[in-house]
Length: 425
Image (cartoon, rainbow, N blue to C red; front, side, top):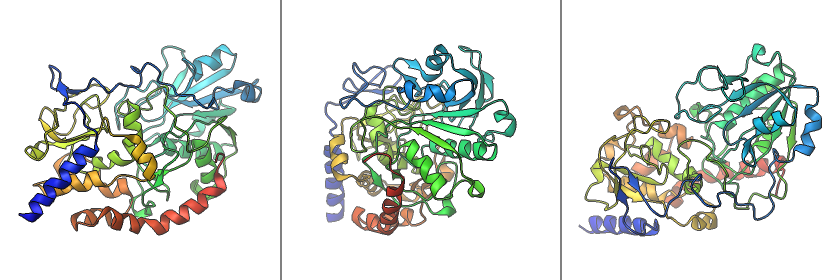
């Protein structure tokens, strides 16, 4: 009985800490909605530039001379913007000869769901050939690069190991190194740049959502990570890629930065971007983490938690975001993190494990919690976290402090190594 009361209190405290606010309503389709949460596109002032931050792409005066007379390839997606235009459109107007566009996961226009195969195509707006760099064709071929003199990489990252754009960067650098092409990186701020946390990826769990021995939240911009790939000899066959980085002006890692464009379909609010290093771990559990709603990565729950939590939502199929979400059309009960105070995360500078621990402890189906056989929508927790012992630590009831202490030796070594590649404080 005491154990049950303790568990109930733990859950109540976790819900209270989430800043749940007014009870959410649902629309006609049953998808949860909240009047206080806005998508990045809906926000009145989505772009925070308090410190006169200028992205690499915005500083055209620094790199246009490098492109003069050259055939240019561009690795871009919808986050590749200069003001209100795409970098592609802006550079075309400035007379740059863009030979080919390369698109990562979600495609150049960003309208493909996570993990969906994207075929090569011609961009309808510009008429430029668009090559997909996701799936089996993750690395540009010699043929892809034959008519290119220089490759531009301009993609907004969110600072997390399992966010696949840094894998695209590695594949592009490897191909360009082998084919003797320079890579021009137009650097952008890391919205989670303040955060360096999580276990270092064990090579045994190398996958499409994690290649290199870095923590979950790596605390680097794309430009800094490119220097690390070169400097640590992590590119295939230890090749070195010739890179030129246009730094972000007036930026340091502790600055708050609100993205002007959603970085991918399911990171559609600033709240989701800031919670992502923590809540993406729920992809490795038998819980829906908001996929199939307009608030992915900010709500989490399951039908079997009815009676444990008051908050509920119903995942639906949403084209371009999540066509077949876990627990589709079933009412899920759990935590609402849409109004959680992100300042608390910034203070702790740590991934929050208490939510996952709370939901595991509350689950009447503990044997199913990490069971990937139950749904193809689930990922493997070891690949997400990056180490073998995390699953058992949760099952054994280890505290957040105990789990975190097992990460510390590798994390300390990484932080020391990271300093060699920093472009910003």
